Image 1 (cartoon, rainbow over the protein chains, first blue to last red):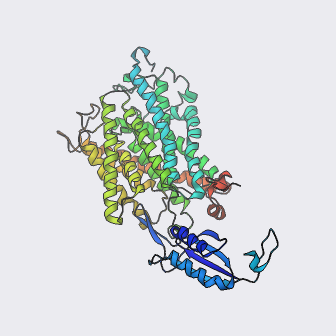
Image 2: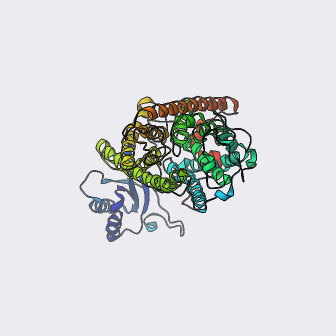
Image 3: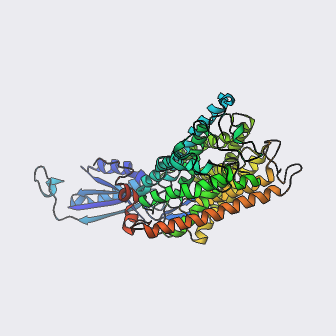
Length: 112
Length: 427
């Protein structure tokens, strides 16, 4: 199994959710996060004093998928989250050793 | 001097009572104005330092403050005639020989004492903006009480009492440019010089956490200021109406002045700029409110908006952490108003103007000299005494005046009051 992790622009969340649901993904987890990449942060000015805010709000999503689906799901996320402007985020895939469904005790692919 | 209730004018009395309530409302307004500008972890501490002034200073005013500010006819300070508000129901302080001042009042002495009390409350509260985020609450309690009695009451006596030496000299201060704004503004500077900078300032950004609160506070201040300035006419008359109009004109012009320079210098017209500009204008018109007319309030306001914006940029250059710009807005705004008054004071607006301003027909520089003396005396007296008070408290209080570093990082809300301002998630 794989864990597909995406960092996306918050306003793209609905599009990404629809795209991966359309693919057949059963569930996903999101977190509101802050960070910076090449986009860097932004500046705010209060009474003439400029503050650099390094961390930009983003949404992080995590989706557990079957090995064979991982790259396709990553593609779906990329297509849905892309605006073409700097700050669109990243997607990566990491291997997962084991997955269990807590209620039933099912393991592996059955637990997805 | 016994008040002759035959002279009571119901309209004047009603206006003074309403004005007292308006000025009272300014302190919670100020709390919100400042509260929005601090970080989330310090919002309650800021609100509390201000709100608490309504408690402590009011009690002290009743016990001794009113008497020290207005009792007797000495030039430097009052006396103990009105301790515990004794005789205030019927007695005014004596007028000095040859002057009729209290004798002309048409509302009872207790109304005057109540109205003046609200000024005593808000003046030290103004200082909280400078010392934000780093003073122990217990140290603030001591400072607040000592400052209200030792610094505020003498200056109020000098300027507002007809026997005060600055009043007798002919210096003009309609509603508290020197007594309130210059006094608190220079005290704020003295206090932060002893207290030191906030941890991390100026490297770490400390942006306001809620400008909506700040804007709400500004609206309340603006509203209350009509009582502060128009109430200072001491009657429901034409001078009160002029002061009302001037107050509003100056606030409006200062907002525009601030926003124009801000837009030019930093690219945007900001909400905080609109709020700060309006307050700067209100501060500057305070000494002038019932003494000027025509276009003067617009000029005074616009100058204050521009000058105060520029003054605020000084603190980073000079390296003192006046956190929410009490010096830049109240001290500088107070100076702008108190000195511009010497150019615009007009006997046609108010017969109490004995020395017309420089730009007025038959005007001269006599008033400017008096204004400079009044401003200089307030600056020196307030700076020295405030510096000594904070320094002494730092030595005498166990733990000093500043919170420990760890508490400063955690925030004053939790460490000083064991509360938090915001809890969105259920706990």
